Image 1: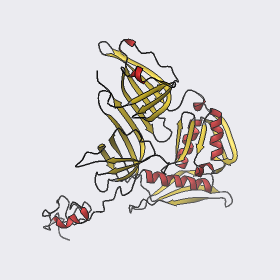
Image 2: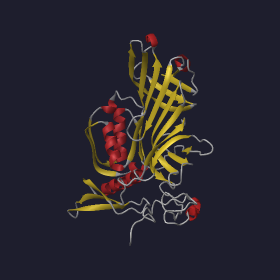
Image 3: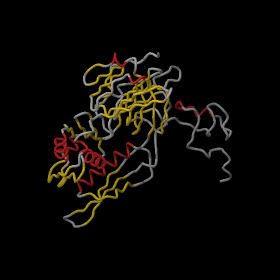
Image 4: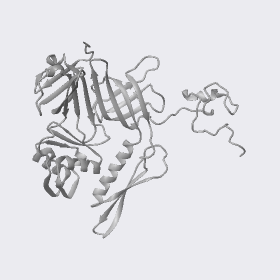
Length: 384
């Protein structure tokens, strides 16, 4: 029998089941996502002969990896699988909150002349949740807010899309936080060592992306006093010298204040979608969604900081343990290769370039002598 190389601990309804589960547990997968998606956990167990007791629905579940709490939630489903001569497995799936109760129940409730913070807390009280709202959002005043046949989940998701917020429910607490800002979570560092192996197994990153990049956001609203439609505009500076492109929001806001909030949300969205990628690390249980990730040692222009949007921890008794990160919102130099080069593309440092010029000058500033910004240089473009 294979032996675990990762230290793990599982508590069910507050009882430590680690020793009892050790002969049967095959693997652990924990996923922490941004936004309204629930944290999830899956435990795969060897159920040869149907020897395991079926876990109860709604049982509380805590999972630790290397001494760090990586999941807290409730058992959602239990699935048995097997085949003739192929053994039997029991897969226990859990979510970060109990989805069986009032949290998904449609409501009919409204609020006149109040704040978003008051409204979300009022809805939270109805479903038994303690709601924490970012001060920047909590104080936003609206003349009318309503849940017209919507559940608490739906209202939170709708307002989060409108305001560019992260809406998350864990156990009995809901958080409505500003997206793309420092949430006080511990940062994670990845080192892609060339001479000495780091903790990065592999990476696949695009440090800049053009399709979701805008230089302005515009939102229309109706000015009742002037009896006409007006536009609220917010500049977006991604510091990339982009050509002008306007993110014109098709839906109209109720007033100038709401239009401003929506435009600011589109600005944060543009910053977040400025680049994307993924990194696979040795098990890093402290990594969390919305925390910052610093990549070092990959290459200039890719090294930098990124926002973690999804974390997946995997531990297997037959192999190693890893942490996979999905990344967005590049910063800290990501997307910028400041090295200077004068040689044609494809010409290594110190070699004779296609134009006949030596490539040694391209090494200035620590560069390799390649310059992809001058693709036509010396490559037979024809007469001027």
